[in-house]
Image (cartoon, helix red, strand yellow):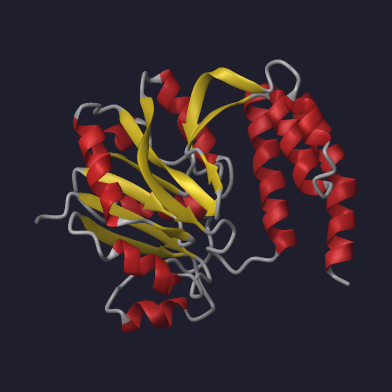
Length: 270
């Protein structure tokens, strides 16, 4: 069967997860893999070469969004998918996604994500409100002290007027991706999928959730330290806050994050 989905896999020091991820991706008869590497220094490139996979290698790490857009430009299949290296995608998911997209050309399909045994997270997420941004900053920088649970009880914690697709695994038509303008490269790592969801809503698109689950070994797709990952999360969220909620919220988030982030980094480095 002719490949109808170009699956873009962005790697960065992802060698530990690649064998399991590629085993699931290569089992599909409708996908063609497009790998873009963001300057890995581990065994990622050696492993890809051993598997006969020739990635597009970027000389530096310009961020996920740039690499994803470059990967999308490598193919010409009718449909595009973006998958993180820490996802294990069963072949049935692709067939299910194609059936859903056949009736919804302006749609994006996401799976439910199995984070750990018995723990499922939806791929279709409600919109980011200012309270949720504050909640995420508190949760990640202050050791989950329960502060976010208090904010969750407040009205408008989520924005119910729109949704966004979790970027760990998503599928859409190439035409729809182009109409959306691709991934927003001003959000190089985190929150780009949220921005994509806002754009979908503005243009009348929908996000559909597949009934095929994908295992997501969250946070294991790149060999990045916990401090580096948290710094990138903080940067993405404050940049998002500044663009869509104003500079005052962004400043408040930076002030909130700094003491907790500094303490976490000191404790982790011991």
